[in-house]
Length: 343
Image (cartoon, rainbow, N blue to C red):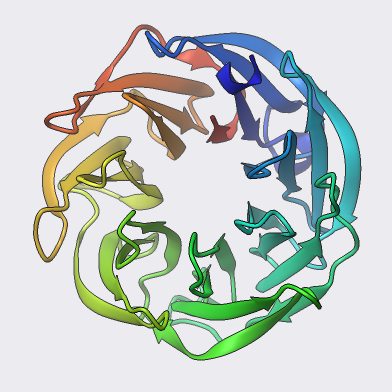
């Protein structure tokens, strides 16, 4: 069944990586074990992946100087068939998401500092861009924040605005999507993080009233209240890791049930676990991943799958449902330059 197939994106030689395209692995839902199936389709630097919410279609960014997005039909045995390749209108797209009604694909262009919108037809195939919104500004870090670097696009599961997280301008921009025209309508003002935070990714709570943002540059997690009108009110900040040394947060996600928050920390090679039982996240555990650079992870039921880009592996953990703490299972799965796991 395709529901048991996990897809892994990564960097190819075009971006200095060692992969060849999108890798597939069969997942045992009971044990969590992954059985590698090899590269199922060749495409350049598919560094982030997403599925259509209702159709058997997979989307990948091609993180290149002239950014592209590729769409693939998903077969019964997990095979991928190319459907379309479209320009994203900006350099180095690093994240993408499909809106809940399945009508549009949103792409964050990191190098281009922009958000692209591509309409999807009844088969989930993307057409040419219907909009491209560029962000302006910079942050205090002259090397990483010399201009806008949009790092994530997060559609609201309900009726709220799209949130676009921009590392370069220390901002979270809010947009409404006009479904008819496929254009983005800005909601002012943007939410500003602490200067130099370098917001990377955002995780929403299932209650729709809270979210948390990983600061890549200052190694923090910022808590926000989400109002019914889509405004973001900052509630406070905590350290993303309790370890000493260089800490560069990557992925952030809320666990099943909404009791725990998970943060990947590159540099120290950990996943930090925070309880969400108070005003701010409370660190309860920090688990080594077995590598130095946990770029991305995904939670599936009682299992956690961590992609370590530099260690060329995906590590499998079982998450204790009571404590929320992951424990490693078996040996790592070898995957070259993995940057995204899609279950």
